[in-house]
Length: 203
Image (cartoon, rainbow, N blue to C red; front, side, top):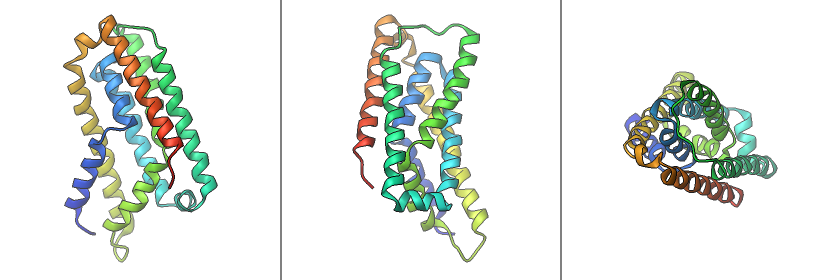
């Protein structure tokens, strides 16, 4: 296999880059605490694992070569981002103290994170363009592929947890009425911007 260290550097830089997943993690951490953000983080990581698998199949090739398939996935993803943005923007100011609510929220956040990643065609193209450069097809392809996917998914969990911990330090103020409203507006607006950006993206 090619340079694993180089792949690691590229993967870390990619996961660290601000995107819809990072915004979702920060928003959940601020509103629900670090433990309340775990559901969304695991959803994103699980979605990453699935998308990476799709990128190695014929479906990944179809998405990469078919303009129609790309457009369908693009608009589904854009629509979901805009939906999340509007939902967050219109959310009432709330403080999270209830354990029951937190458990329910974690389940919902898992599916939000999972859907967020599965409806992002750019993720498929990322894996299709990056993975082949680090796989020796004359050797055990499945073993190498598994190592890369597990590495990337693990980095998603580790880095997003770090983001959640950073967000926790600002939670006291941001969970006030004024701060919570700002989080809703900023997070919602960012999601909608990502959605519009994805809708206007090309291959």
